[in-house]
Length: 155
Ligand SMILES: [Fe+2]
Image (cartoon, rainbow, N blue to C red; front, side, top):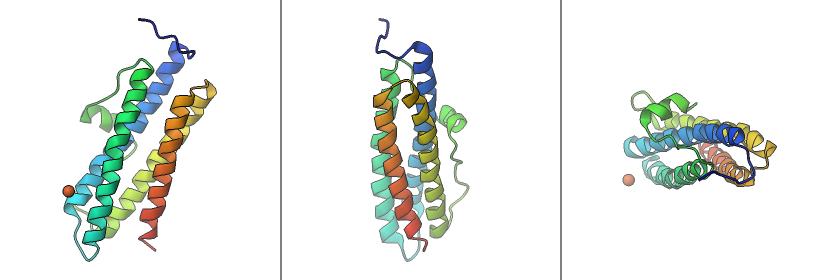
């Protein structure tokens, strides 16, 4: 059945494309955070192991909301590692970094998702796609706050 929500097909496709990039960034950051939860070592082990768990659980819930918004706009959500690697602005980790380097990479990851979400927000705002704007605003809040918390560990 034809979609008639007040946003033309071409614009829905553009926003879904942007949300797919936010999804790919978020999924890549989810995996990186879970990886670091498993592999972190050192005197901060307990703090970081638990903190990373909180973060990857939040990301696991977020990717579902982003993918379902793409579906509500009438487009397929990317869901393979191949697509995520192509779409994501976050690079995968090489080897097992030291704890401090893990924190640095996670700060950069959260900042990257915030930047992608901010770009896509402008697109969604331009065609009065408030639900996408709302979702993107919430994602920016989470990523900017998490980046601040992780950054604080490095001072
Ligand atoms: Fe665990």
